[in-house]
Image (cartoon, rainbow, N blue to C red; front, side, top):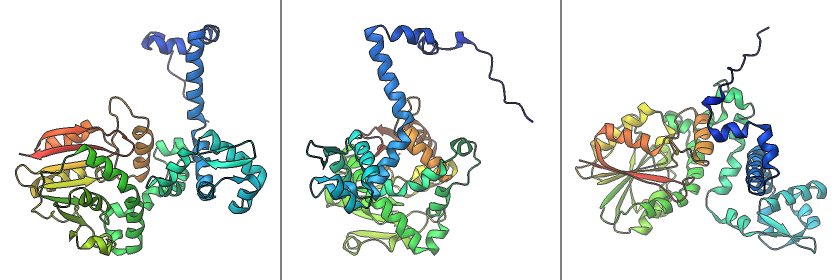
Length: 370
């Protein structure tokens, strides 16, 4: 039988001062008696417990969504008994779920025994893309059932099978698969478009080509903001088949795969919205080279997607998106500096990172072809 590997010998001098203190039970006992330190210790303890209970919080949210508790409360306050009948959840466990929802500030109760939808719960129902993301996350949760095996690369992840779209061939053969992908992405693209357009001024641009833009959700928002801009969409034929009829007359559609086909020329701006993090470095480098070749001198590339915090890891992107893309097995969540390096290696200049106010929605880089 193999023995458990022994930990390396302790080297306290290699640790930072605060870390050494945090490893000292004596310091913790002292901190509990000193008012200022006691407040700090309690806050750190609460944050640690929030990390510990995060999975249960997310599963409570799934239950509230799939049980349609928030949806029912959107019509007005209800008692536990009324909600039990409407949502098909027995009263006793429903009370536990409702209290969890109240602790998460998604709903609240009153002294008359009624439950109300809280502003955060109302925002959850209203913000595009949040509910579909929650419904979709059963796949990711199953992939993380054995997290150590997952990080050791010993898990055959379901997400890797859920996104065969990114490989191209299956999407061309399976219109239903392409439609499922496109619906999921389109519902989250409204927020992405809003944040992107706040970060980038397209008013001086004449023609925008969106590569890998699905059924045109991003371009629809761009068109509303810039009605004089010519808009083109490049994606695989099965995906373009799902472009809404009302949008077709506004767009120039270009079927193809950026893996095997050149990009159409004529646009002075090319956007890659939530595209790069779906792919490995070699595929990204080849795509950026095609973008560079398709743009005229002075043409702009626009990259918009959630980005790693790099040297300062971000709690949203470096936990959620980085692990999600790892489960996909096809790409990775890069920092703005990494993407800038890829752009520079391709020949782009005037590379400008534009951090988003909501990095969990998107951040942006722009660059110019010299």
